[in-house]
Amino acid sequence: MSLEFIGLIGPQEASESQAPRGPLVDLKFIKAFAQAQEYGGFDKALLAVDTSAPDSMILASYVAALTERIGLLVAHRPGFQAPTFAARQFATLDQLSRGRAAINVITGGDSGDLQRDGDFLDKDARYARTDEYLEVLRSTWTRQQPFDHQGTHYRVEDNLTLVKPVGTLPVYFSGASEAAVEVAAKHADVYMMWGEPLEQVRERIAQVRKAAARHGRDKHIRFSLSLRPILGATEDEAWARAERILAEARAHIGIRQGKRRDKNFGRSNTGSERLVALASQRKVHDTRLWTEIAALGGGAGNSTSLVGTPEQVAEAVLAYYELGVSTFLFRGFEQLRDAVEYGQDLIPRIRALVAQLESDRGTRSA
Image (tube, rainbow, N blue to C red; front, side, top):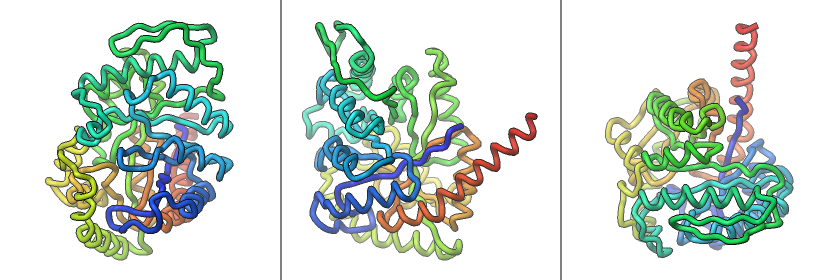
């Protein structure tokens, strides 16, 4: 399997445990953060989407001009633009970045956040719309002759978009519900999961592969896991750092929740519900999968951590790789520091472990 690492590029230095620093769109931080991850060996960086945040597509265009190699995984909510219009945007970004663009399709998420942008469809209707949206998106990227489309949500006549992606623009798909799995099975190149225990990840991979097999795509689809590694020189130091991060997050949580105006805390989507349930069972799963930030934040977003020395965390990541996960999205609580640390101490160790594992497998099969 091809190993891939994804980071995160936000417009401002902030996290659950770190109060925002600098302006909301901090040009110096964006540059330092993007270049640190590129230098550190990340393959891509996610640019997230939120109704209260700066626009991810425009940020991606800025990052493309600051970097040479790192891929740009742009989070995108179907339904807020015409799919033909979005296809032109992504194809243009791909041309400007010389083939570095990718799309992270976000259908669900916090319903309250969706309503702030005027989307009041229920979950099943949103995923049905996403299914059709992605059909039109791919047609816009690939058709060499004008095409028509008439469906439940979109009607297109005589569309021929001249700007095309450099190659095949990959679709990363997020969503944990049954409806999400069905749409991912048809369209996703990479199915993205939040950090859960090994057994749950094994079950989810089997579920998605079974659904993808109905479309002849079970060998095509790849899997991504999002985690928040917390590293220390010793295991005790790593756990002490985790406790400090938790204390800082508790100090900031009231302020952040007030700003988020979250109407569905802890139950905004299936993925969040799963994380909250895991956190209610125990604080640590599988030796070092730490859930207390997920519990504190109501399972919002990527919020479970692997805690330990770089060697220990790399071994934990390898266990997920052996289940079939080949893409890992890492972001820290101390963003710039953690990005540098991951690049220096964690990513090289994981690559070495995977290379050794694949070499051993090759030897055994020879």
